[in-house]
Amino acid sequence: MAVSIINLGLPKSGTTTLKHALDRAGYTVADHRIKARETPDDPADRVFVGALMYEGLYKYGDPLALLKDYDALTEVSFIYGGTSVWPQCDHAMLLALRKLHPKLCFIATRRATEELARSIMRWNNLGKLRIPLSTVPGLPVGYGHEVDEQMIWIDGHYEALTHWFRTDPLYLELDVAAPDARSKLERFLGCDLPWWGQSNINPEDRDTPETGAEPAEQKDTD
Image 1 (cartoon, rainbow, N blue to C red):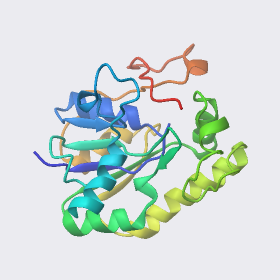
Image 2: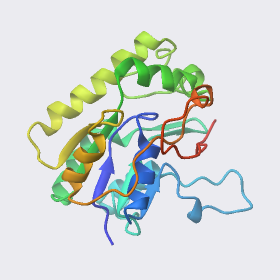
Image 3: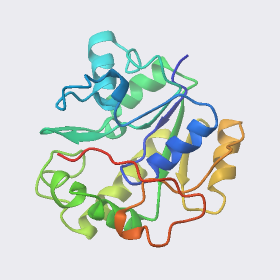
Image 4: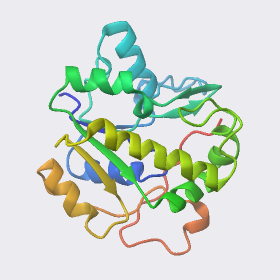
């Protein structure tokens, strides 16, 4: 087994939707944390996908060296315990991944910019505390408290990916809310997806869940 898909989307961009879709299609997915590698009786023990990618890159020369049990990585960034890690924003990381794994497929899940920014702001303390108080690529400490600031950061991230990958046929920016999102992803991956819907819905939005919605999957708060 080897990682064949990495999502470079930001938090709340549809990362959990992608996880569930790939799970249902038979992929072995690592999303945000790998709880199977954590010590069950130690609440402070956290094994994050992004941390393993950096350990792999700098200790073993390959960002995927410690992730050989997985086919897909659907959320790679994290902020926890004063640590802020964003592999999807790191050109050195992307360069190493592309050089070492030329057949690797990159997806960048996204939603409409303002919708994504507002979702980040509503999700636990992510937009109101953790991002503004952390060092985030393109969003220095003290910025990100406002939706307008988040929108500049979000657009900058996806524009940077578009520039980086240019005409790379193994890169797909995917608007998860688009009517053709499922068919685009199926064509890109060359496989059928038994499920496509909405996952990890913000609590404020759960009064009107979309068809096929999955239960929310809580991710870390600091």
